[in-house]
Length: 218
Image (cartoon, rainbow, N blue to C red; front, side):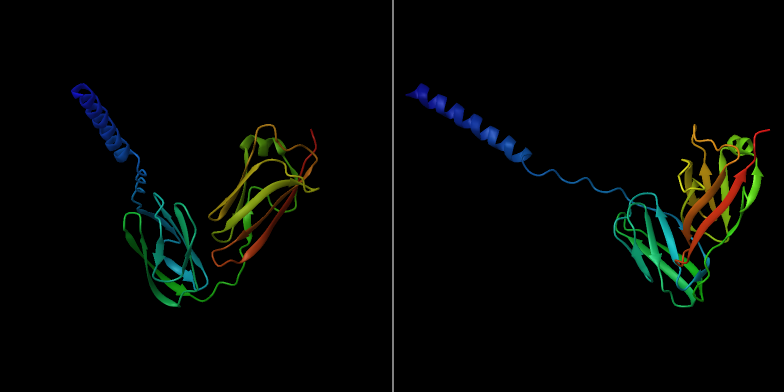
């Protein structure tokens, strides 16, 4: 009887210990806290801002929930957009965020609404250019297009028939670039079109169309 009691006690103790282990480790794992975020930059950073314009704010990490003292906040990840309308005059815009509990203040001079669409002001190739040397373009490996103001959007290099040539397009600030992909070089005696659509901070859109023809083989 004593031996049986001892055996029962040992089994009970083992089960009790096991229940403690399971109880401690069986709960839900705590979620890892998001890293603190800090303000990195804003575009525009200061100066004139159209009342119907917008501001792009970038952080070093995801800021979580972002609030602004004026305008509407949208976006995700490390970037947020704060869109008007803003009241004309001096603007002191305070931005606050949850991940890290930070805040930052930007100052602007809010002007009349911007109703003018951006335009193409220059670049590697002029619209309508003929006898363009493809070897020179392929050698540089990039085609640039410049705009009258900061824009966002996209551009692509196409044939006259609308087929994508395969160069990589990017639009940033006042410049659009088309980067050569190996094996996608442009050829002689061919008409190409740089096509796309861009918009400024106020949402004014513009179609991009720059046509050029390469020269024949010498």
